Image 1 (cartoon, one colour):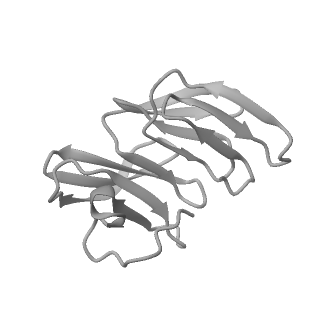
Image 2: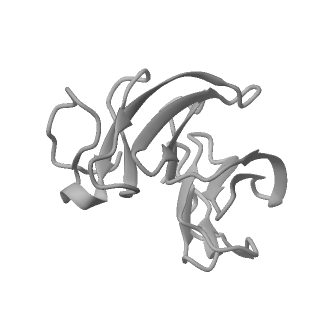
Amino acid sequence: MARSGHVAALSKEGIGSLLAPDHLTVIRFDLGCQVGDVAISAAGDLLAAVADDSISLVHLPDFVERPRLDGTFDGCLFSPSGNILWTARHTSSEMAALEIRETKNWQVIGGAEVPDPFANSGLMLFNYPSEDRVRARDRALGGRPAFPDEPESDGNRG
């Protein structure tokens, strides 16, 4: 759910619905690809969908694809302001990376890389109360922190 009140829901097949803030208007759509993760911007005007070989950036409500981020990603999440897109991916079967991208130009402006003791485990991203942080959880660890020194939490998105 976006801060604007928009709600996006998608199946793994990329078929979804966008609920407007009035909770009366529903737009059904098909991204035409398998989706591993999805994020909606705070303004509700941009959808980031993790596909097999990229992240598709789709402008809402017209569903026109904007720039595509090429590469294999595990997850993505917009910051509370929508100015940052966090991405999680594996740089190898033994290493996991968290990247910080500005939404103005989609360039990586920071990040961290850590060993993955489970080889290609799945990473999940969750909002943190401050703009400059995100929670990364490892599916193989039952949702526990994926990066060192990250505090335990209840794991709730948002």
